[in-house]
Length: 102
Length: 479
Image 1 (cartoon, helix red, strand yellow):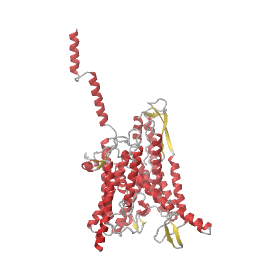
Image 2: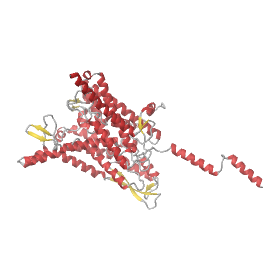
Image 3: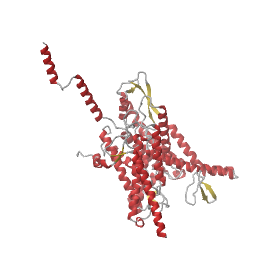
Image 4: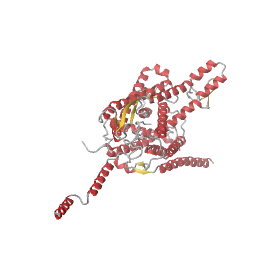
């Protein structure tokens, strides 16, 4: 009697994946999570189609494209650096012109 | 036939295109204001930094009336303004809309490729426009400048455009408020309108000295002229050019601007409200508004990009091949277009001119309205504001139409939104035309862009202050 039951349990376990009901639930949740991630919408607070979203003007910069990642602070520094370099060009040109005239 | 798609052509370049990292957490409002302010400051400084190497930019500017719309400033790092970005967006939308590019905006991968294409194209256009500007002698004859200076000029212009591109993306990724492009245009135009109204600069006229600012001039002539009636007439309708060929603004222009501003604000409240209820919160009821100005200022911006590129190409060709029939058909140029396609697509110089040449006026009006309506229709498909997108958005928040079955939300939206889109475009086009004919300060399009952008920011502030209680989807308002 008891041995028969034990045998049945063993067979059932063998038939399915290892682990008990909890493991199955956890595995299913993991699968769902992966599916959700792969199908997830665009990232970012202003993601198009996401709850409370606002589509942005002229282009959809809300997705994480596979571009070369740049930090906002770096962009600011680059901008200021570019402007400074143009100013520097003007200053150097003026100095050279002054020397040339002398 | 082939599996190769246009979008895939850009894939090899993807790793090299700069991409702003999205914020990992929601950026607090004050920080957004800071980012927006710093971005605007950088843009304004670039608008004032003169290009290194140019001989002079004193010659008359053939594209003057388009610069305000494209946030461009002659002879500075912002010579190109936002033109490369807007042109790129316009081209890609036309390609997608005409099915030359296949994009499934519901796929994440396609959306990413779409962005990359626009960015890549914007960079190419920036280099192309910069090269064209330099080689056509905009800054002096290339032979006089030398190869080194020419190359330096091209690099300066292209680098400036790239920076604007990144600043705009930075704001849109959520670090700032709204869109950089609208912000830049609105700021330039506010500055211009304010200056034309209140400028203390004086100019010499045939019969004396006059203030540039329309309001200042009004106050001045009312105090100093003995004949008050004549003074009032002069303040409202003064015309004639200064010695440097500048048309001084008058009070009529000023009030026309205020009128356009008022009309746009008034139209903002036109909407169709769809009653909705929540399946999550029992008893919750609200409305989802679909505005008349559904796509806001986007269509007029794209239409401006189209015409500005046409004019630029036409002028280039005319300078080189002025006797060619096709070139002359495209446009015959003096200071402005005097005949040909370019002439008919440019706004009449004044109300009197509009009456003198009615064919020109009619062609301009219908082209502007049609182009705006078309761009508006195309825009909702690529921006996630189409009926399908909105329906999906509402469904994801378990919002359904009150008193209807669940499946009817999409049908209802499909009936309303496309109409709102093309009507929005046509209305915006009509407003721009009316502004031009009324003589609003700057240009009609500029005033319109200015107004819609400011209103968009106002709405965002309101939403920020109230707080989004239920996380309702925001009406797809493009600032």
